[in-house]
Image (cartoon, helix red, strand yellow):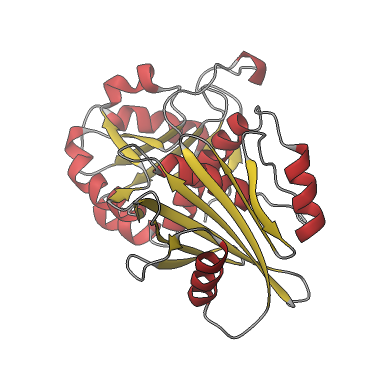
Amino acid sequence: MQKNIIILLFILCIFSCKRLPDSTGGYNDITIVSSIEDREYVNIFISEVFKDSIYTPILKSSYNIKYIDPSDFIKNKFNKNMIILSLDFPQDSTIDLLSNKFLDKFNKQLLSLNDLYSKNQVLVYINAHDIDQLIRQNAINSKWIKNEINQNISKNILHDYNKEDKSKQINTLVHEMFNINLKIDDSYKIIKKNSSMIWIGRGYPYRWIVINKVKKNNIEDFKNLKLLHESNLTSVIIPERFRSEEQYNSNIVLRGLYEHTDSDTGGPFVTYVYEDIYKDFKLYISGFVNNPGKDKILLLKQLESIFQNIKE
């Protein structure tokens, strides 16, 4: 795996970070720079790396992928998340010229550049001889490539979220109850709490954050979660369908859908499962989104960015 290179320069000129413009585009937009000749093969690789989807309840991709020609690179170079992907074969006279500039400058076929053209930008450069080498050599690097993009998505979300005023009352209470530090903004209000649970929420677009502390047991996490939410949250049902489980660092991440019977609505939820250092307790930190008829992916990603940056 190639080491991430943090560098603040243009291809030909060095600029101070203070002079860089703000990056542009949506948090989860990914701009893929490739030639028409390479596009079919590049799409095979990119589609596999960024195949993550979430039920909202409609199955939605976690990313917005946009392909551009090398001739459009200059007017898109400030975008937040960029990937330049070039294959030596088939040959072409567009992406290969751009690719050669990176090869001449850095002498690497795989690298990541931060803040190259704009603030809070990541640019991943990938070069391979052909599609076979691209898939073969980058099979072990695909997680790293996706992680570079995911980290930048989270960084941009938190950069903007941290500008909002925070709730001293809620953050102090969360620390006292669970010994963790969260940065909850002051649009959230306490809905319900007891000695081992707090439920907070905010207005449109509607979001809840629920934290439960339970003694470690042998019950499956989803069963624990269903019992906790259906007993503590008013009129909430956690159905069996569309559940998933994945790993984030040392933590388990649970995804699913919820139904709110009183309002006849629902939406997606995500839960990060944290264990304390002595393994005596588990924290289930859940985020719920309700945004009927509109995008929910970015709202979920904002909640996840908060959960991923919890500090004890």
